[in-house]
Length: 300
Image (tube, rainbow, N blue to C red; front, side, top):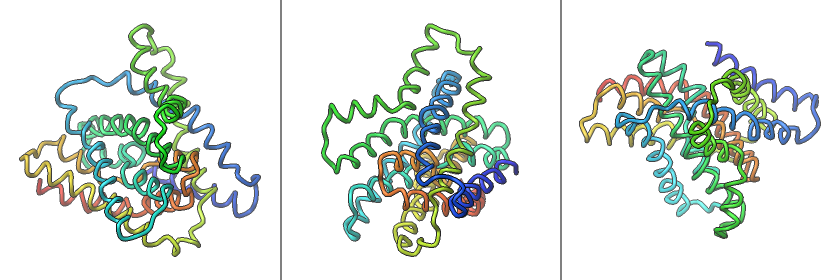
């Protein structure tokens, strides 16, 4: 319950700060700096070294990749019927392709599936973080250069993205150093991610203009909250996989859009208004969609 209250407070605080002009214009840029350069790297350095790799990780590890891959296909299909610029296409791919597998995913999964389910959710989240730090950033970089694919420039931008560098460091450093003395520091820094990121969303959120984006908003959330979990459910059903691991994978696939892609979209100037709108409305609808999917999953 505290997590859900924090979500509302963080977004509302940002909205209030903007409405009553308590902060300078474009203050969200400073907030995003903390999220990208401090909080996200801290999460990578804290949690990635703790993963114990084994064959059981295949389902939760592959699920986010499947969801992200199909988001490309989905956006490509709708772009045949709706004219979209590169920035808007990238926002739809990023916001439709990544779920809020941690801050919303962890408490909801534990509530529905207990501690055993939570362990599986953590694996889904680490995979999601890996993909957003690589393919997600590449998607944003390509769109920000108006679709021009300059390999060296793209590699430079990807390797200058702090969370990606932290991701690499999280694999390499534990081979030579014991990072456990830093656990408390990394924990303190990592917990700032969600409130700061959602505060940034609130600073940029203008729901009064949602009608102009209602079509794209609806399509994005239809994929993220309905089609994405349906795809994972169908694959596991056809493979006759009905274990707790499979059920949690479907449940995590039904989560509302992830915060990090919104920050990335804003950082690269990719239609931040639409990105923040999809995230905010998605968080609200996500509470209902996850309940519905928790009932459907029983038939897996």
